[in-house]
Length: 133
Image (tube, rainbow, N blue to C red; front, top):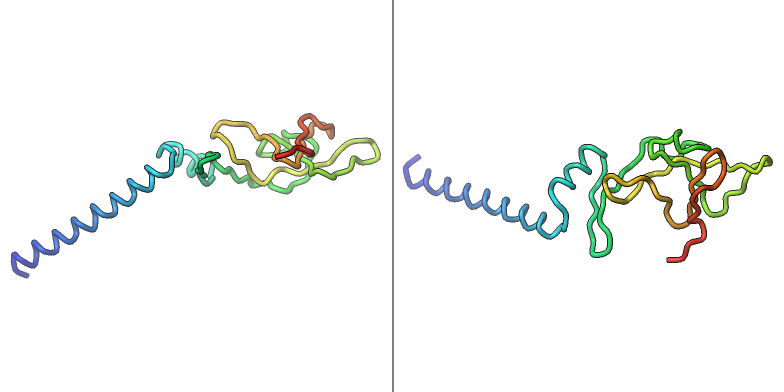
């Protein structure tokens, strides 16, 4: 290969690398999130970082989603939830499930979504079952 061919391939490689760096930079600039938050979400919490004009945060997925519970300490989310129309058992206690995941700040505790309530010892402690958007 002659000097012209080597020089041409180096220039093409540099253009490709600079283009990739530019695209990655624009992506992170438009995401409204710090690179640190995105990496923390991905690797520490095993989640996906969400960002929009209204809300941004880490959607953390919980490995025990759907497991039956009556206390938050039985779940990875430290929260046991019931749905809007869940009825208590004959002793007046609720049986819930561990939540699927949560969208919030990286260090936030689980907060029930609209249509859910949080229970401890089978009793409702945080009620969002009948909230209005």
